[in-house]
Image (tube, rainbow, N blue to C red):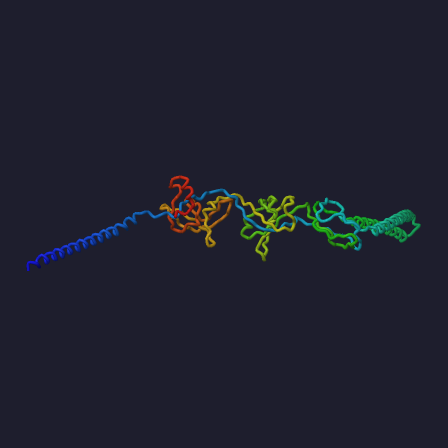
Length: 395
């Protein structure tokens, strides 16, 4: 019995120690669990108090009011102010000479072509001979009539004979007048054997050829009067009412090396083409080699200056066929807004439906979406590093 007592005592001590160790281990686990809960409860507060990171560092601009020239473009043909058709007034005579060609500049009264005149000269000579004969007959009739009228007062001849001599004189006078008219007719025909330029200008077309038979009314040449061209602009009905006589217009040559031509509106057509719904505007052009008759060119009309609310081209975002800008709010968050674009000049764009006192993202709009938080460049230190970060993604 005495030998077993120390053994039992040792077992009780080890058992108590084991229990104490287990209790300490459990207490340690409980302490760690409570510490983790405390960290978990305090973590959201730290996250909530941390500021969100900006998506982009940007510069801002405000729309500017500027005086811009108001213009609109149109297309149209270059045509002659007046194109004269020059033809033959004779028939059945051959062309013996053609003195000009297409593109030649001519003066009023210049001989363009000549028609064979031999037959007409012969007819003129015959008419002159008939005239001389008629003159002689008339002189004899006048002498006889004068003598008979003197004898009539003496009663030597009858009144009937006196009347016959008077009639002979009148007939001789009529024949003389007919011969004179025949001379004038042949002289006119002889003059018509020379095809004369009716005005100054340039030959635009030629159908006359040596040896061909001229026919009355046949076209031989076409002449651009005074070398004067005009632009016949095709303008829509709505734009037609913006134009007035005397306004300036600039016409652009198909050759980029040629400078623009400045013309003036001479006339606005009183009717609209029912097929195309366009009206013609006639613009006088100065003498130039930049455009030629028959060209289809573009031009623009100057409507004067008009106020425009403009922004830089870089502040405009084109997406899905529409134009947008990003407005920076007081909380540095951007709001995407759809806008209507007007005129363009150099690197600026007119906006038709935007307030003038808003702040817009100046560039880098392609990296932004509606509601993004941004850092405005003027609010951060002006250092080379921050300058490099402008219009680049913050992350």
